[in-house]
Image (cartoon, rainbow, N blue to C red):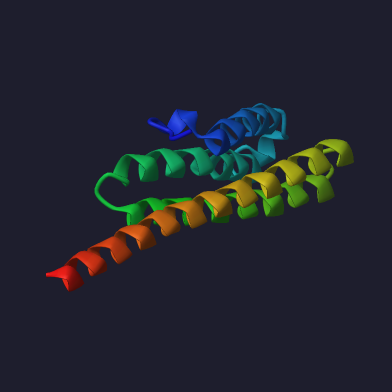
Length: 137
């Protein structure tokens, strides 16, 4: 199935769902963390979705640009695993939830890597087609 809107991407839906969970959790963290660690995990979790949306919107002009935003989303998914480890080690997060979210962000990163390969493959196919058209003239 081809997505016509970023909300149709399975990886967007998955990342959005977990970002809401993370956001709600972050609001329960101690006040001292609200402008530090809690704020950071809110921003990193949401940036996955925001970068997918922005890149998806730009793909009509540039698949390279879309891929750049996908790569930034991968970085944010990996970043989330670091912040969640801090939450675990500072005892803000229990081990079960930490494992659940860590695995979720690993899966999101894998899905994003697959999407990046797909977008890069489309870009490479277009490049090959253009080269073939030029050589035919």
